[in-house]
Length: 483
Image 1: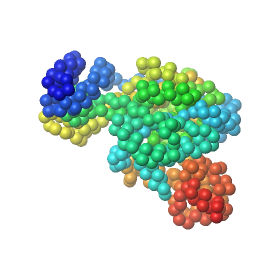
Image 2: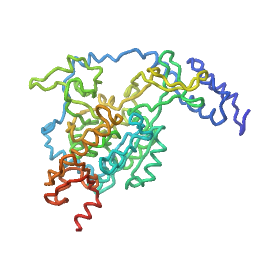
Image 3: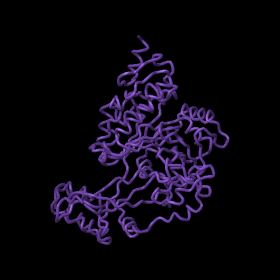
Image 4: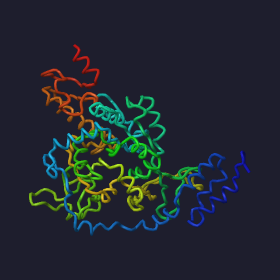
């Protein structure tokens, strides 16, 4: 018996009864070493497990998703290609519709930011990474300032729903509050936390401990957004606010054109329940999800599941038949999310073999050198086949897609690549307005100054020659216009 009515023996028996039918009683081997609080924590984690689901997932771990039937009928997705119309909808009409919907307060943003910066060698939430090429501003600041800029254009606040993970939640909250949410009102920020799944030993199916008092838990993937946004009440609060559409994006891409009116407009005018931004693949084997159409539905097929002969198949004009690469940016109807949340198979778990550090009561902490564990994740793109009238909207990869994935020095998607791409975009905006930027000079433009080249018109000196790194902030513009 322990303090405050806490009965350790009864709790142990309860947990043992839960775990024994599934062969997981090893999770209690550290029990005698734990304090009362540690026992409560471990007990809570065990109670939250769906042990029957974990057993089914492990038993089916070798089942490979057979996409051959889908691929036999796969064709390019219905899409808005760059420079073309969709169903006779001109770009100008789509943009005007998107701007109207934004003015009417019917759109919110949803930012998925549960990842740590581990692969970057950055021991914090990835959203805190200082990616601004001149300013050093973080991904979070850049994204939020884009939302604020769109809010000012719309003449009304646009809320941000921000999904964290247990590993990033508290540090994210503290960081944003310490920076006063970079100007975003507290009333317009909805932070919610995604769920977790335990890692299983690949050879035995045993749930791994991360420490003596905790399971080895990982975020349940960006698809965990669906359950989390509903469970937290965030989606209901947004609906009560009049929100009908969510602009969904991931934290690692600072070039996302957040709340792009033409994208929202095409989504609304086409009657789509879920639209997705894509880029034209540069080669048949680009490591991106392939958006394809099968009958009347759109699907994303992982590059690893796409047979080489189909990946290389060409259209009559010589272009790739399956050309559309997914970049994780979507516009989603709120009511669609409520509907699909009731479908048990809307978001299946994907299985991955990974290296997972764990705690063994006999060996202590173990750091594997080879993949040793099975992780389970859900992916948001698995919702696309359930969406009516889903469409793809092509964007220019050089201007809108620069994912930050890898540590400095990596071959691609490293900080130096992302910053160079940001500089190139902002340089093009300046040159479109008559500026001359000398070779090798880094330039950066705050979203609060401009979201595109048109926003800079008549706001910078004519024939301006830029010879040293410069960050165009609102203060810089204000100082120039008042001088």
